[in-house]
Image 1: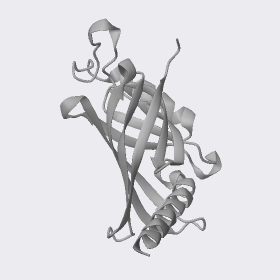
Image 2: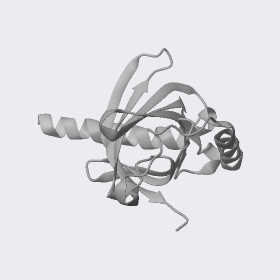
Image 3: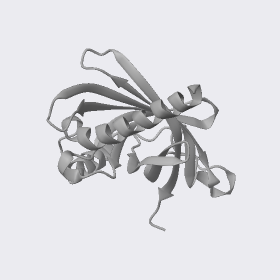
Length: 185
């Protein structure tokens, strides 16, 4: 019985997540994708030189940088709950473009840093609104990732922490992240 309740709670959390993420992005990131991409490109040009820890090549030409464009999947168990394009910028910012209806807003922002053991950590925040425009609180997405396949993939874990409008913690949805680098080549 305890396992059935636990599975029900996980399913309910995923459903809330799917509804929440699909309905929330417009309030957190009102600019269009093209405006966000233009801002990201402009900030990359104006930033200081890339630090050695954030961009380098390992022997044999393997990439050790998270910087670039990725196709990412968020999974809870075997279920993909969201896919997105993520742009990791040299200045430590991230642009997240989930596969949701763009009329509700589908571009959000985060920050990242290079961590120990060649890992990368991401903090991403979302304002949460219901379908009627009522403020529901915030969602905190955290990711811890490591590069694989000579820097062409990354994988790791994520957590989604949900908070009510007063900032009180409600619940957490943990899962796994897998991604492939998008290249011109």
